Length: 312
Image (tube, rainbow, N blue to C red; front, top):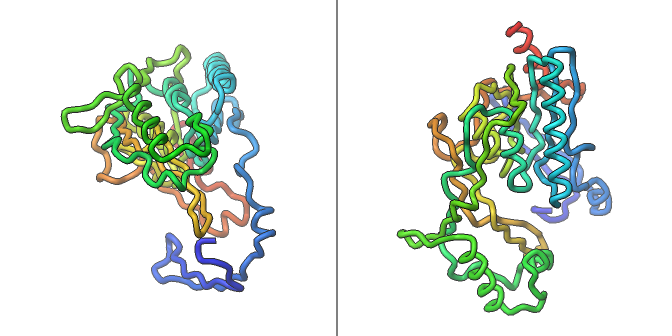
């Protein structure tokens, strides 16, 4: 879609273990075939627990999105019951798979982190919006769903939209000495260690698809626990990410739809582990080969199992 309709595409790629690039020619896919393959998510369950053996459990959390307070309570109850059961059974090893987690709703990432971090912690050091002038920019291209989220009429004028945004910001944020706006401290989420915080060995599986709340979770757990990270560097930053206030746009000519977030979330990490601009990097980098992928072998999970055997 980015390059327009083509009968065929020539793609040059560099595999992680290769030094020279390879080229392949692929046929274009008709639009109707492409649309039939697109789904909102490519996982069956948002989260689930699986026992690999009597001493090892696999907890998969594919998203932090719950959308409603009711669903959030269900997620919290799932975590509470799961870690209570894990504690009673004396499980020694926890593999946490968040490789598909692109984030979600505030608080869900923090709730899971409270079962892995043994000290008081908070969501971020600050949330910063540089300016409220002309926010949002290009309001004429905002998607209709954004109007619904903001409880605005679809025919609202740009002036009305920006006035509403300013009002919302001033209610939630305070103006700093630098002229920027900062989230009020009483709006920042804090957590203490959960009752059944896991006390065994933790292995977190990550990928480049981990963003937003998934990235925040990874950063906090990497900074404040002894968990071992395996896989790929997260797409979301270790030190900060953008979030909180989304803008949804529909471009006038290409009709492409995209979202951006305009608040900088400076995450509550203390250790300067990585260069600025980095995601959370794993202790063990694992990149599945094409052969492993085609054979259905999960190289990242297998690495976690290998490390568990070495611990024993």
